[in-house]
Length: 475
Figure (cartoon, rainbow, N blue to C red):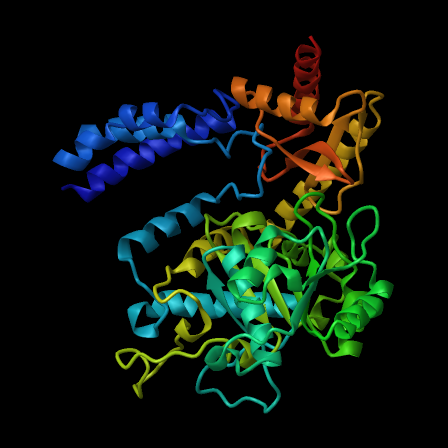
């Protein structure tokens, strides 16, 4: 097999795919029937016979890319997934080919070094104390720590494991106490409820916090919520704040929430999977004021830092809490050895872990901090410009002016079912890709402005297409 020749075939096809999508050519999304895709991709024949190389590889890649959702198309506005920087994508190729499963240092020293660096880089942005090198002389004060994981859901689970280890250190050996509780807002990502179930705490232990009309935690109501938890005979394991919420993109008041948690000695976790990247922006970092008072943070690089999926950071203010989250024995891994670097395996659910930091550093090293900050500023500003344009239209309304790059809107005279039908119509003709969300009990159309090439031209085109789809729905 000629790796260079086949790599050239693939990269040439990807370049054409990117150029056409960025130029607004073709459909944004194509949803063929799964049985047709399996047939067209010749999966059965290739699985039996092999031969995926040369011209056959070219044909396969061309057919595959024809099915791919075009995140690079400026009319792609549906989901919070990065349009990856090309260097980040190349870094993912390098990681895939070298296959350094770097959860232990000897399996990927370069990958581990990059992960150590980017974790400390993130920690410094939060305002915590970065970890020293393994043999450096450090103060006795605790420093922060973290690890990169395969996605925000796994990151939230890991952070809550750390919170559990603080309040119930015996849980790993004796089982989960039945008196734990978690305080969250109704706007929390569904991965939080999943984590509670996986941890064995049970969703009945979730106490919902009071929020305002935009779904933001009301900090002055936190003491009463804590009192209800304790009067029910439960111990509050953690409180989860959003930075920002998934549906509407709103930031909880972190400084006031942190103060309430500190007063009550309750672990504060911030789900910043999407919105923590505002830390990079001088213009928008005030949205995260008080974040340094939290105990843990989740921050996804594969959302607003142009990084290929998946790359999510779990960060904790005191590294000891993450180091104690897992207990493990494996004589072939855990033993005395010469160690010039660090192992991350004791901080993760994964035993085998990709070099996720390399993917992220491909984007960071190419754009630099200022480039990523400019991207965040641009996407946030675009969402606000879109809000101001749409909310001024007599037939549309928006529930809130965006904090971040997420915008919800609806037609005044259409019901919830019509909005779902409008979305279906846009996806069916491939003109635009957007999602929907419920806000204050009503279905809205929802845009996530992730593409650096999306402009107000595309927003105006979207509104025209929504109106046309709405007319068809009314017939």
